[in-house]
Image 1 (tube, protein in one colour):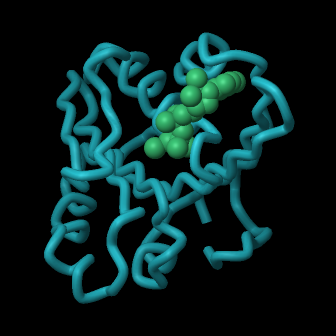
Image 2 (image 1 turned 180 degrees about the vertical axis):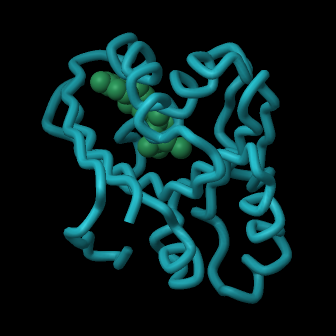
Length: 155
Ligand code: ADP
Ligand code: MG
């Protein structure tokens, strides 16, 4: 996978939502597309497009956490939620600048767990993350509360 987006993914699916509730509800269908674990997925999209909101929906669908319990890991960098089938790691690399800083986060170890679903906001900032990724979700703000989601998995 390259930062610009690349063809050749095995599965590609597009969704649109018109509300936060719509994005949360979509989490179930997205979770089905992302499984089976282990996978590392980059969530791409500007601030406020809905990356964290989507993770809430995915976590709830997987029984790993309730929507309210999923909060942005902007300052903590990583949150971990354990569900019956999946260990969900939610990362936000917005505040990291260098591969050296990233190396302290332990992303490789997380991604090695057989039940790991690693969802990385701002992962496209780092070549090492892009190279390691199994897929990406590209989110765009279409105006108002409308958002588009392009899910590509499995190269
Ligand atoms: P990000 O993690 O990409 O910065 P968040 O999920 O934290 O974004 O925030 C998304 C923001 O957009 C929230 O303020 C939310 O209320 C708003 N929003 C409006 N419409 C939608 C939608 N359809 N899906 C997701 N979030 C939406
Ligand atoms: Mg976020």
